[in-house]
Image (cartoon, rainbow, N blue to C red; front, top):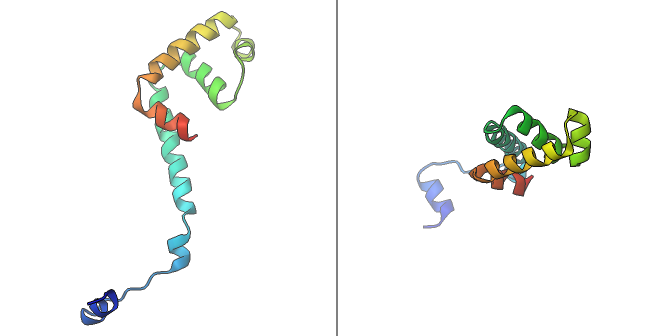
Length: 102
């Protein structure tokens, strides 16, 4: 018995709207929202200064010098805090997922 015969025998309507089936744009938006939630969860492990540095470094693509100027701290402090933050985040499973697929 093929699918069509089965559906006819058991009076089941089988109809797929191919436009809806092929349109996966909603999945892209859901994935973006999931990644954003994952980023927020991972960043919650950091101190406020580390969080700000990582946000400026990753999401605004600023250099350590630019971050230091913006936060009015030394470049050495930015480097040290960024390294500690990335080390802490590296221990989190979600960072690999979020950064790799961003």
